[in-house]
Every structure is written in structure tokens, then in C-alpha cells.
Image 1: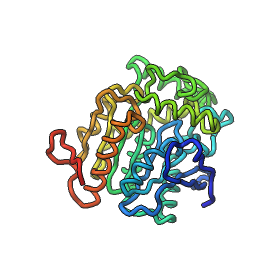
Image 2: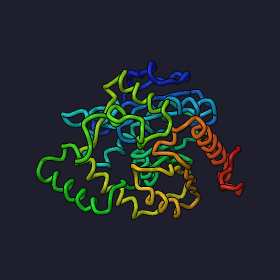
Image 3: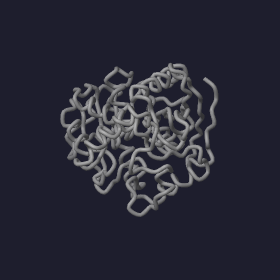
Length: 328
């Protein structure tokens, strides 16, 4: 592993982190960020969403470090400082969703090499939740999983879904799979959209932090997905929906005002997950880890309690009102 740039100037966190370059099995260079490597309680493997980058989760890593956990986050291929895969670096692209599993394998190998403390836990957001669910089904070595707004389906009008399938499938046959998906733009969402009625967070300070990060380091920016990404995502989410849930403990968060991923797919999945629980967060948008300080504090407390219970071999879900054990 070689040291990679880590933009500590824009993270709004006091816990120092560092970054490394990794090379995947198919020779793609990705980046990981690591915090609190000497933590005592375990490690969170953090899978970000589409368009995201490791610095965005520095405050989450700080929260976990204060609770005694290390964090490893990934810049997926095609975003952050990882290799961009087509000529236009602002279009989010992947050859196939299965390719992301090579990023996972490289990150897990790095966690082993760095001797990050065990047990390990998965914390996955949005697209990272889609990748993470597949990883769990392929026996990724974690003891439990936490998802926030996982992309187990893409929200769209029922009338638009057949057209999305047809257009994205046809683009592959016509050599247009690297083109921008209709209805998306060639710039980062937070850079183009004002805070008012945004689909990510109700917290203006967190929204400004995201804007400031991309203003300071535009090389982290990413716009809409390619038609090939769309086709691959539709295929993967459909395939995952037809498979049974893993058996390890799982805690999933869903904002009550979710407008990006398919909320019903999340409810369906969690209703059939043995040892799983769904927490719906009133008033929250897509990114509960970027929400108000009160929501973040509550979610962090619950995640820490979940990890502690799982590590101790106990059920993380009790009978205290909403069913979640809020203390270790």
C-alpha cells in the first residue's frame, strides 16, 4: 500500500485520518481512508454511496473513534480520488456492479494488512448498501451490518421504470453506455442545488460542509450516472431482491422523507431479515448520518450499542419500547 492524499483541511473533524492507494484485482486504483487504527473495540468498514468520498465521513469516523472503534472507508472505482473509468470524469460509471466486489476484496485485504482491530462491522450507505448486501451474501468477514438509506431499489415512477430498463439496455448495444443518464446533470448535486428542498439532509450546516468540501477539492466531485451504471444498478437491485437475507444481525435506517432510493424495497427486505430491525427516522431525508446533530447523536448511540451487543454475543434488539437496546 502507498500513502494517498487525505484532505484534512475540509473535514470538520479533529480525529486524524490517513489514506492509502490500493490496486484491485483488475488493476484499478482505489483509495481508502483509515481512522483510529489503534482502537480497542473493533472496526467499522464504511461503504459510501454513489458520488461520495472518504473525507465526507470524517465526522462519522470521529464519532466511532470516540466510542472505541476504528473506521475504514472506501473511494469506489469511478468516484472520489479512485480511477475514473471513462473519458468524462464527471459521469459516474462502472462496467458491472460485480466489479465493486473487487474494491471490497482489496479493502478487506488492506484491513487485514493494517491489523485493524476485530470484530469488524459493516456500515453502508445508499449505493454502498447495495454493494454491501452483495458482500454479505459472499461472506464478507463482519459480525454485523448497519445500513442507512440502502439502495436496494431505485426510486422512480412506475411508468418510467420500463423506459429506464429499455434505454439503459439499448445504450449498451449502440455503444452509448458511457453517456449521462437522462434527467441527471454533469455536476455534483450539492454544487448545483440550493439547500432548500434538497433530498439529502434537513441540516443546513451539513449541507454547507458538503458544498465547501467540493469547492475546496473539485477533483472529488461527481455528477450523474452513466446509462451503463443505471442498467447495472437495475439488474443488481433486482437480483438481490430475489435472494434471501443473510443471517447476521442487521440494523437499517430509513428517513421518513426518503426520495432517492426505493423505501418499499427496504421495508420488504427488513421484514424478512432474521435478526434484523428497521428504524424509520421521522423527518429525515436520505442521509441520516448527515442529518441534524440530534439525529446523528441518536443514530450513533444506537449503532455503538448495536456493535457492542453483537460483539458480546447478545441480541442487539430488546423490548424497550421501539425494540432497540440503547445501551451496551
